Image (cartoon, rainbow, N blue to C red; front, side):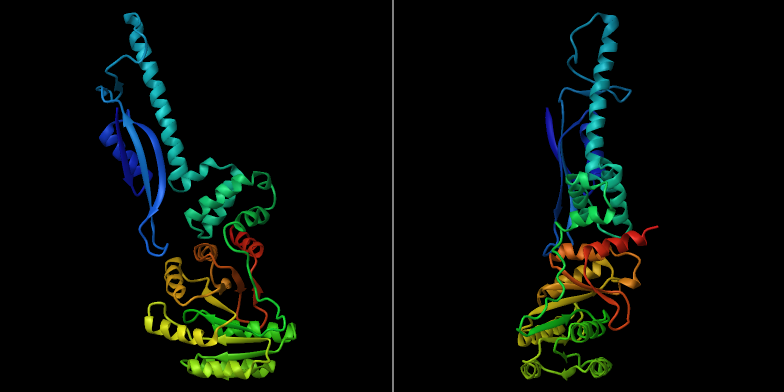
Length: 374
């Protein structure tokens, strides 16, 4: 018997190579899918490995069927030999077809969803329509299979139960307990950090009746400073401006009596190492209680992956997604939270201050996705 391993970027390529090299009589002994390459867990490639075997004495006849070198059944009278041989060959080919079908169903893209019950497949199709990546859908599908008694329940309950095991539970701001909390917002340009800080400050100061101060280090944009000061005047909240890490530290020292101090940072390009170093210096001076990486939900997944990689060198504690109202697909939120292994804190769904912000909730997130699918 000849045994050989085959590797390719898809199951179909593996099977085609097996047929070319070993022939149609080959039998699959083992198969697996794995990820290779990448950097810091990002940009990896899915690969397939299949171990196949073939009897060394076999050959194909002119019809492309197996003609074994030795009988597959006991010697029979001449008139029955052909029938017995064809029956044995048919059984072997049928078994090979079943094996290949199982492997392809399990490993080759969305066709693998055929192994799930109809209810599970329907939920996975919703996730696919929202841009949730195949690898994560496969994990969720397997998790749902473990939870089959729940599959008959509401879709949000079923999916929520599975997803809570895959991503950290959301963590909005905790109530102050007599200790000042310094909250820093970091992220790329244009994601809405200043407006988000205004929303959170208003909720904290006006609704929760907490003592709040605002500090901005976004001196690159005069409009951002004026915007934050305007919000501060309306809400009766002190606003400080710091252009250096030392000034930031002084501003924080001046507001030791506040329960919450929100820091608005300038947008930093994830491709600019100099700007990232400058941001790191501000955070080291501030020593925030928690740092939220603010991301826009209408950003493509490849760019979000690059941002995660760059900002992981700066450090952050939570993910805050803005502009959920500006995208038709929300899958990037789950994809990113799963990759980062960080909790979600808030979602923003519009420009209105302070209304268009809500605490992150997987149940609300799932309800929104289900409503968006026709």
